[in-house]
Image 1 (cartoon, helix red, strand yellow):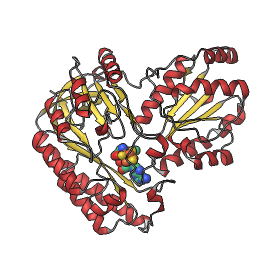
Image 2 (spheres, protein in one colour):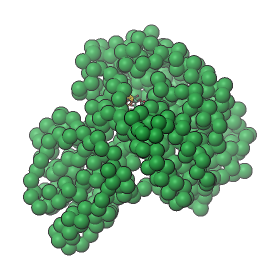
Image 3 (cartoon, protein in one colour):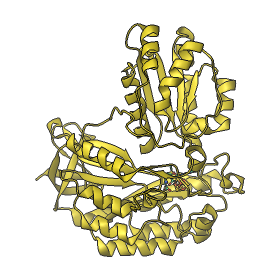
Image 4 (cartoon, protein in one colour):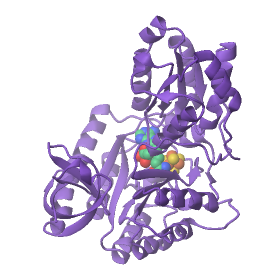
Length: 456
Ligand code: SAM
Ligand code: SF4
C-alpha cells in the first residue's frame, strides 16, 4: 500500500485555521518510535502544518508513546497532566496520544477517567491515518477513545521529517513474532511483517544520494527479516545487497535476537567496510532456567558459542547487550550466572532494566517475590562490573587511530563527539563545522563509557 496525500484534510485544515496550524510532536520511546515520530511530522507537514517546539502556541500536540516498561508510561501520563491547564485556557487545542500505549485497554480506561481532555488516539504505524483522524475531529468534534485495531499493513512512501541530515533510521520490518514472556511489543505492534527488499533498497539509495552517512536498519528482530516476503532474501542477503550501493556511508542495525543471529550474518559483517563492527545482541539473562521461562529459545551456551565465533571471525567486533534483572523467580544464583556471562563476553555497553510487569503478558502472571531493593542492588552490581570491563576493553585502543562520524557536541565546551565503527563515542577538541563528517581520531584515554581523543 502506498501513501497518498489526503486532499480533503488539506482543505479542511485550511478552512478551519485560515493559516498553517502549528504542531508539537514528542517521542517517548525506542528508535522505532523516533522513526515513527519522523513520519508523524512528515505527514503533518504534507497536509499543511508547521512544526513548533512550544506547546503554548500549538494547535495540535501529539505524544508518541512507549509501553515496554511501566516507567515509560508514567512519564507520558505525567506529561499529559501538564497539558490540562493549556487545554482549559485554549479548548480548541487538539491533544492526541499515538504509539504503543494506545493499544492497551488500561491506557484507554485511564484516559477516560483522568485525562478526558485527550481528543484522540492513533495506533503504532498509523501516521498515514492521521489526516483522516484530524478531519474527523475538526468536522464532528466527536471523541472516540477506544483501543484501535493493530495496524498490520506495510505502508510505503509515507513522508518523513528526519531529525538529522546525516544519520537516518530505515525500518526493514515491523512487529514481532517472538512472544518473549515479559514483552508487550507483540501485543501492541502485532506480528512480524517485512518490507519488500526493493522498497528498502530504493529508500536506502535515496538516503545515500542525499548524503546520509550512517543508516540504521530497524526491526524488533532483524535476523528474521524476509520471512513471508516473495524475494526469499534473508537478513545477510539484504545487508550484502545494500552494501553494493556505492557511496561513503556506514550501516548499523538493531535489534538482533540471539536465537536467529547466524554465523552467516557475522561473516557478512566481517566482509564489508560499510557494516559497522558492532553487534547489539540482547542476552537478557545468563541463567538457562530464566531464559527458558522468558521463552527466549536459546541457552547461555548457545549465546556464548555465537560470541566466540564472532570474535574469531571478526576480531574488531564489539558487543553490547540488554540485561533484565529481577525477572520473576530470578534467584541470586541465576543472577550470578548473568554476571559471569557479562564478564566472559566483555560488552562495551550494557543496557540494564529491572523487570516491569506488563499487563497481558505471561510474565505478569508469574509470582515475583524478589524485593525491589534486591533488584536495585543487582543492577548496581552489574553496572560496577560493566564500568570495570570497559576500562579493560578500551586499553588496546589507546594510541591507535580510528575513523569516527562526528554526531554532536561533546560534554565539555569546545569539544565534539564522534561515533566509531565499533559504536564507541569519542570526545575531542573540535568545532561544529565537523558535524556529519568522518574524521580520523587518535584515542588518548578512557573516561567512563566514553573515549577521549584528538584529531589525527
Ligand atoms: N526486540 C528487541 C529484543 O528482543 O531484544 C528489543 C525489544 S525491547 C523494546 C528492548 C529491551 O527492553 C529488551 O531487550 C528488554 O531487555 C527490555 N524489556 C522488554 N520488556 C521488558 C519488561 N517487561 N520489563 C523490563 N524490561 C523489558
Ligand atoms: Fe519483545 Fe522478544 Fe519481540 Fe524483542 S523479540 S520485541 S523482547 S517479544
